[in-house]
Length: 128
Image (cartoon, rainbow, N blue to C red; front, side, top):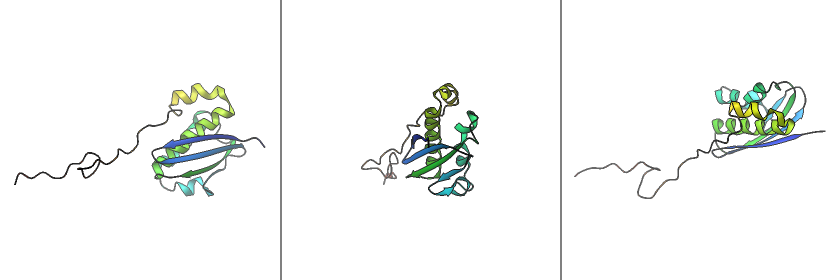
């Protein structure tokens, strides 16, 4: 059985995406996609690469994702799906690139600095 793989990362989330030819069933951490991303708009966006390339009903996706929150996980899945689709057909590259699905979002949480309450938030100042 042929299988295509793509890794996606965003913030602290890491997604491993396996695409297999099938009927379009998507499983995330052993649960249905709709159930895993219940009521989260970012979840819908995660499958955007499949819509853009018109491959929505052709592949079953088996996804494992860990770390981060729902939003970061959804974006990690999006990148993973896009990379897996490139393995399926390298000719999809221009379409995915045009839609911006092949870029890894480099923004991560800035570290906390000593003497400050958060990364940039200084303690409250009082003259006396």
